[in-house]
Length: 92
Image (cartoon, rainbow, N blue to C red; front, side, top):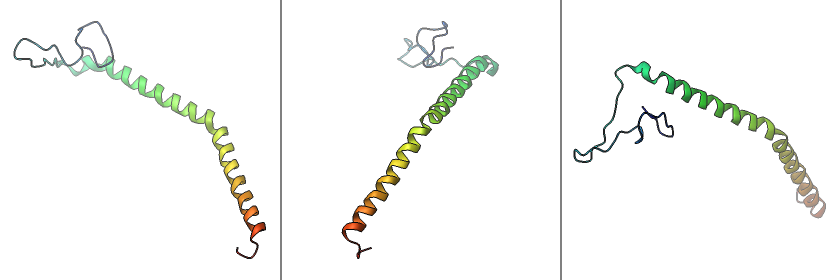
């Protein structure tokens, strides 16, 4: 049975069945044994694990840039405070 986005060669009309000639209702094929879906479940879990690993790697690689941006914002706030304090020393 095909799942969305996969082509296992079983059917050419996707996982929701073929629109038959019986009034246009979709035919859904349900396996008798749930173990028939084991390969698809393993593939799904593998895809989810890869997606998590890619997200984690991206976060680790982007960390120095986020840290530099935070440091730049703090320096900007400090400079703005110093400029304001020099112009209006009695207001703070």
